[in-house]
Every structure is written in C-alpha cells, then in structure tokens.
Amino acid sequence: MDERLKRYIAEKRNERCPHRVLEQVNETIQSDARRSSQRSFVQWIASSIALGALALSVHSLWNNPLPNPAATDMASDKNKQIIQETYASIAYIGHTLLQVGQRSGKIIAEETLPPLQSGFTHTKEAIKKDL
Amino acid sequence: MNTIRRISLIALVIACPIFGQAQQSLKSDPAYLAIDAAIDLSTIKPEVNVNLPKFLLKNAASEFNGGPEDPFGKVGININELIQDIKLIRIVVIEGNKDNSAQIAKGTARLRAQLEKSWMPIVNVPEDNVGIYAMSDKSGEEMAGLALLINDGDEAIIGNIVGNIPLGKVLKIAASMGSGNGIDIEAIVAQFAGANIDADGGHSEN
Figure 1 (cartoon, rainbow over the protein chains, first blue to last red):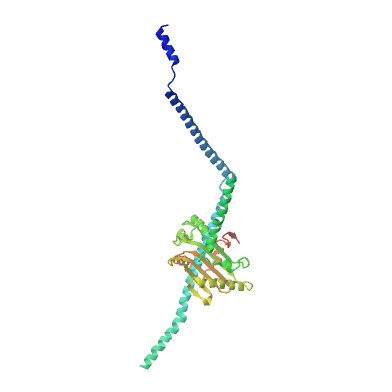
Figure 2: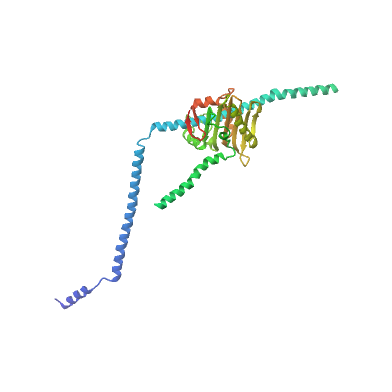
C-alpha cells in the first residue's frame, strides 16, 4: 500500500469528533426527549378529561335514563300555579284598593258633603236674612 | 386527604350561614310583615296561605313570560318586569269562628300596631277594619312594600308584598278581573290550584 495512503488511514483512525459537535448532538437528543415527554403529558391530560367526561355522561345517563315527561309536566304545573297565584294575589290587593277607594268616595259624597252643603245653605240664608 | 377534608369542613362552615342569610335577610327587611309571628298558623289553619318568594316567582316567570298561559301577558304586563323588584308576595286568609276569633283579633291587632307605627296608610276604613299601607325605601322615591289588613270578624285577610310594585299595574290587573262587588281570593286561588304554599316557602297540596 502506498505510504501516503497508510498514513492517511492512520490519521483518520485517530481522528475524534469535535467536542462542540458532540455537545450539540447531545442537546438535540435531550430536547427531543423533553418535547416527547411534554407531548405525552398533554396526551395523558386530554385522555383523562375525555375519560372523565365519558364517565360523567354514563353516570348521568344511568341516573336519568331519559327525560321524565311526567316530572317536567309536574314542574310546569307548579310554575303555572305560582303564576296564577301571583296574579290572583296582586289582583286581590288591587281590587281591595279600588273598593276601599270607592267606599271612601261614597262616604265623602254621602256623609260628609250633605252636612257641608246644608251648613253652607244655612249660612247663606242667615246672611241674606241679616242683609 | 386530611387537607381536603379540612378545606371542605371550613367551606361548609362558611357556606351554612350564607344559605341561611337569604331567608334571614327577607325577614329583617323593614317591609316584611311578620304574619307568622303574630298569628300561629300551625294552630289556626288558614284557608289560603300564599307565600311566593322571589326565587319561585323568577322560576315561574321564566317559563311562562309572554306565553299563552301567562295571565299577565293578556293584560299587557310583562311579568319579568313586574316581579323584578318584588322579594315576596304573601296572602293569608283565615276564616273566623268562635274558637279562633279572639286569637285572630289579637294577631291582627298586633300587625295593625306594627303597620300604624312604621308604615304609611294609603286607605283606611276603620269602620270596616280595612287598611292598606305602603312603605317607601330609604330614598323615599321607591316603594319598599305594600301591606293589606282586613278583619271583619268573619274573615281575616292579610297581604304583604315586599319590594317595589307599581300600583298602576296592580290596579290594571285588578280591573282585568271584572268589576264585581268583591273578589273572593279563596275562590280564585282554589280555582287556579287548590293548593297552599306553606309559611316556609315550600309548596304543599291541600
């Protein structure tokens, strides 16, 4: 073999990868590993949430298999009753107000005004007489 | 685990008074008429006992507002707007008889004293033992409550609305019921439902 070629091979055998390149490769490997572990954590969280939601749905379906039309109707009837009672209560208070107002007006017209009127007539007659 | 248990316990201790406070705050409202304190409704059974706190009103209004079964809508009143400032609607009708008349008279006298002391009479017919009272809020511009007290011996009717209710709308609703000589509240409530709402805000069938 050519002497020069032998020397070249020996040189190449002893040659080492530069320290800087080794560090860079090492960092790249570590960062890839970190990213992969983060991704798996996110995946784990997502899977847990999905499983939790599924479990909750199954649980709620188990407890309330189907909307109960009778229960809904009952709640609706109760609300209807509340509305009607509210209306009746307010109407009653309003009606009492009207009635009492009318009664006060009637009392004023029938019991208070005639004596005043007669007093006025009496006074008017007395003044006329004096004149 | 112990920490969680401790936190839950503390949260529970804090939460309990908050839940109780809602009912307590209504009772401490100046416009709240303490009907139950004046008349023992467990011994004197009322014919009508309507007790509608805001949460029931809101719940019902949200379902029926403007719908075909909303009686307020028929007279052009928006129920959500009407109940917006109402905290409680209470009507109690007690039929008088020889056994309870003394207790009713005592109870209504106590309520009347409370009304005369801190409420403003709107209309009073002492001859018929009829009184309608209003209370304004601190600003003096809004109504804080309305109260009605009638005791003609045969029947005692006590009404209390805590909160602001426009009187114009009250009269409009009354006018929509017809112009008969009297409204029989008992008949109306019975016609609508035949149920009482008990004093604690619970709803119970007769």
